[in-house]
Image (cartoon, rainbow, N blue to C red; front, side, top):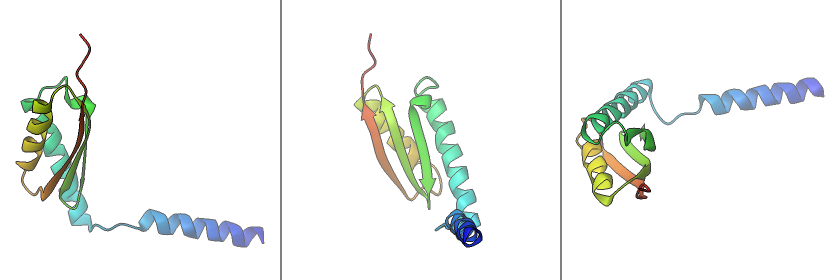
Length: 101
């Protein structure tokens, strides 16, 4: 019985680890997109803001999350992300939270 449960657990772990909705080529594209967005954000928005912005890309859809200091920076980050080649759409989940003085 223990052997069966162990086999079942291993099988479940393997199946969940292999489950993906992207081809290897799409995964590489998403890695390139994410790196390009982060690079452009660093050069255009500023290095001090970039650590507060998380960038995720899946099937060319870029999701921005985290906190920025103004609505202008939020809009600028979205514009920058949408200008990257192969980006299909940008989901801007950035929250505006002014930094304390």
